[in-house]
Image 1: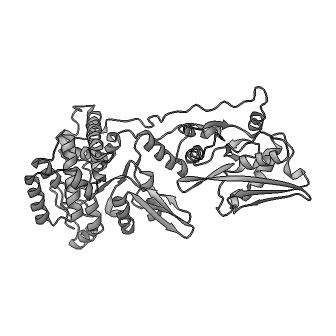
Image 2 (image 1 turned 30 degrees about the vertical axis):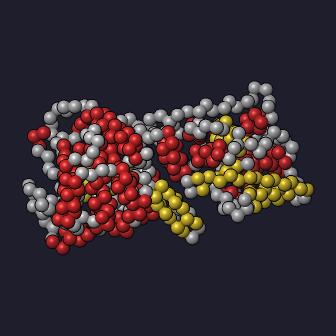
Image 3 (image 1 turned 90 degrees about the vertical axis):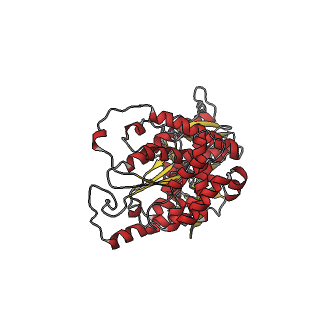
Length: 500
């Protein structure tokens, strides 16, 4: 038994081997791709260099069938299983049972090399009731997160055969199960941002309720620093979320050997990134940057400089928190539960409407620049925050509170706990229109303020609900049991101030 990854999950593949007398021939059937076809030479060399007779030296017709036959087999996942299948058919290995599963690529000298996607494969094997999984030694750390299955890290084919045959002193020790550890060093970056107190508060509100946020202002005012500070404010992931995020990185081949994702991911693609790079897709659907930011932050610096098609593609994931990709070779549903943080200038030169430097853009270029951000996208961003120039005199002042990030993170965690308790596991930004009616109570005064602002500002129904969610998060941060007048007024301050 073996397995391969499929999108962000895994599929169990059984390997059947048949030997018959005749001229040497080695066939692999079951929709193998080129890399699986090439496994014949890798397997033959690995078996020979592990001290066994090479399949090529035998007058045998070898047929290996990878089942189910209607699923495309891709990659080098099956090398280890196919080599063992041949050795078992030759009578050299006797103790391979159907409750064991083998995954790994073989080098020509018999070493077992690491493969991508070991974590989702191990999770799948545990769910399917397998008792033991044999994987490359280099992948054992990420697999150790999975409970309910015994994990063996294998260094080479010879070692594995001796272990299976129970040779004295040749047993491979099971890998102990681990919990994810914090993978990144946190810094108190919020403390080093001078001024911008209102923007820092908005950042804490966004992190507390998982609200999308956009910073706009002239160049050099700290928009990028604020966005990157959010990485330090995000609470650590729960075990289940850490497992899900680590699985995504494992499939994408971005998981370092000793790097388990417990911190919320932070992705910051360049504005030249393509539609497929950001959203995902390709001939065979692959996750994009928005999926790599799942349960974390997607930061889009210079937001209007992204291709318009890329920006508009954010509509569905910002609303539904998933990305649906359909291609000729299949369709896939990728998770995209993110906080979007966007930063932008008010015009191409960056100085329109701000004192200190004159704007040199024409009216047409300003209009063209702003139209890159459509109304539907603006509606899906809960908070729009102006980041103005900072006085130069304060830039070299000593830091007043080095623990500012830590203190704000505690406030964020407390606010999230209140939301989880009130809404049975949801944060405020995840509430539906029905949840708002049943879970949030607004007083008559607060309703009057909101309805008056909605008529005056032309707020859409989506923005109307998002304003209530932001107001509820502000109340949670302050420990209030209900939304008050000043909570609603502050939430309304975060509606867009840029002309659509």
